[in-house]
Length: 533
Image 1 (cartoon, rainbow, N blue to C red):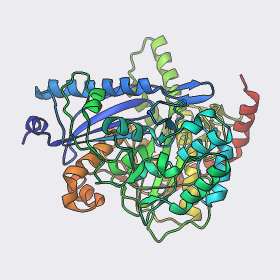
Image 2: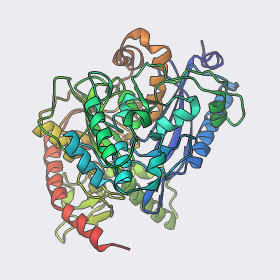
Image 3: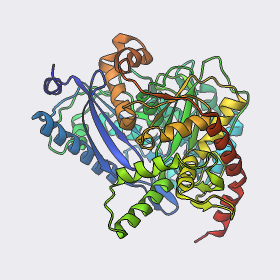
Image 4: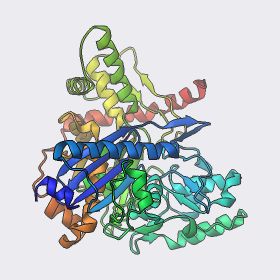
């Protein structure tokens, strides 16, 4: 069939991912070819000390995103989509959406960006002997209990954003195992929440005077390829304001942006890894099942692939926000000088120019901490730029320092895995907007990890494409076998990308930068204490 016939006959998969700054939808055929896309820009808000999005904005954004995709389909193919082979929903992992028994929201949606859970994470990490990061859903729930928040007694459901949207579209209280692994620890042998830890948590909650039980309020865990319900008539109306979208479309388990990033880069098998660069930045390596880390690291999250393989993640709350802000300043300067420079050209020119800088950034230092950073155990953010009188202060070094800093915290976690723990990594895949300028960030990431780095042509499609692939796997891909078989034999077999090997001098320079970065964390802490306005 041609693309038009595929759309008419529902031989397609729709993936929608709610990212930090954009809600993106991608329509693909079952081999992963992109047929159409649409998006909606949005931003989080900082309200009463909480990073949040209103749930009204969630639904406005989803309608806007779907409308943009539908219009592109109509323009390109002359047909209005009424059905799809399958739909998948993905979103930022972690956080806390609490509903009562009538599905009424009980408290503001707390996103992954909130780091107000330090006491809860310390208690739970000690109780479980398993690292519980600040942004995990169980940490948010227990912190609400510790804080004595009134709403906790009425909690009937706790969701991540993806699981919440999926629930409203299908009526099914389920979650993909990758997203679930950012709510609560997973046992990869049984592909479910770790039962021993569940019992410990329930006992802890009971001692606090609450009857809440984790399995009753958290969604049921599913793996890639499992039936996660069908789009209801009510759900179809939440997506398509025209009323053309039909109910009954199968939906795959909702996943987090880590799982969709792994899928989009074919990094779901052991000894593969990927780095997703955006508002937050995270790198992950899929572990061989026999590999166990020697101890608990507060810098490392243990999560899973969409199929349930254990995965070690170095997750930084901060990524490209400060970098983008500086590029915006250069854009303002261009306008003042009467020079036309669109955003794409600015990023390309500035990123490429950074390659001419010193390997160690010439002594310049940057911290793009817009919010607290869990890897470095800093609970608030102050973006700062530093230099000494002897630093080589030029544009190339300035840009290079911000590009290095965008993965600076992530590198600290990766050093633990690759240097201290000896985790095996055959190839690291890069994806996200940071890799749109050819070779620049690819070269820097290879230096940061001392590993080969590959970026595919599909890298900028990101998580929306990844969740669309998981939807396609549900209805057409299981004939190939496991998820990794479908990706290898169907989707990625003809996709190529150039691998960049690490340059020893670049590796040395990034290591020097990292030593300075670690020392200057004290400056970041002082900035938080001093800049209290």
